[in-house]
Image (cartoon, rainbow, N blue to C red; front, top):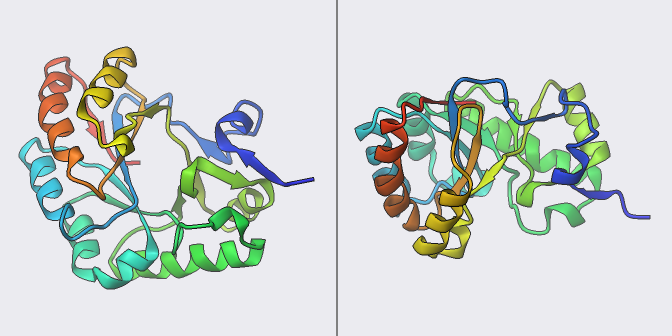
Length: 204
């Protein structure tokens, strides 16, 4: 029997000490997966700075390894640098020890960039139960999301419909991606609306 589970399903019964959704926070947490992309991240950081908003970036280690300056910029501008595995692809097909090795390899890059470390989001939001237990023993927080913008569709209208149907509120963890330019249009449109609603933003 496979030990692979959908994190959204097991979040209903797995203790929140393993999977965090941040529901008690008074802030909204914007999170960006799959970067850093040198063609995207600088402008994205400029946009966030323009609104004085901090976010959390779940980065792929192999990209961090080639973009140490961007990793340091994320940290220096007050954002949270977090772990999204080293290669991302086929992560769930790997043996447990290889998964741990990928995470620790990425963790070393985060610490080298000045990041706090110990914050992990599994690729595609799915995790092996044994990996979750192991990471917990090593002091990691494993963070999910509760609002998926579907920006991976690269379709602004679809993202807009999604966000209109899921009204953002305090405590939400919003999933976005910083490996394509759609995030620019989404943020420029939605951040003024959210701020006008009195929402506050912070890092995990």
